[in-house]
Image (spheres, rainbow, N blue to C red):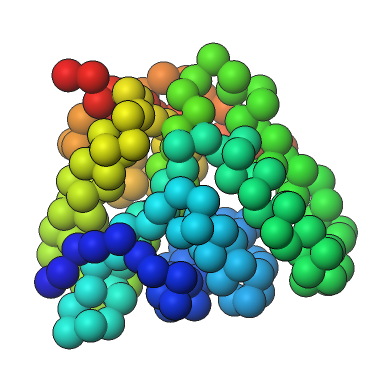
Length: 191
């Protein structure tokens, strides 16, 4: 198993894993092409860690030093194509804005964020997520980040256990998508 930083040409496979393994999330309801653009922007503007088994991507963690800057970068680069790709989802426009602007309501929290983590089902429970997280934390330190947050659905008990086991501290509850409760955890890198 190799853990390394993703390259732009990895974005498609990352998008496919996101779509397959993260069921029920708003981003997962978007097209593979749109998700690929998101991950290209993350890789170009910030970073994404991948786990590879025999040169095949089997998991990833995407992160940003500053979520607001990532959104600006993405919209600057993909504004028009985003409008076209999101046309079928216009009835979900509220969810789009909730996703884009949830961090504005949480301005007292770190700007850096662990955005997404996923491992292909057949490779889960092998410690891959933990190995990727260690690499991710080192990368955050290399970028002089002192702490970062992660948003997790309150119904995702395995994810909550993973974050708590790995040193994340619960900070508060929030509602990103109307009535769906999420929990915000923070990881402190200053220790």
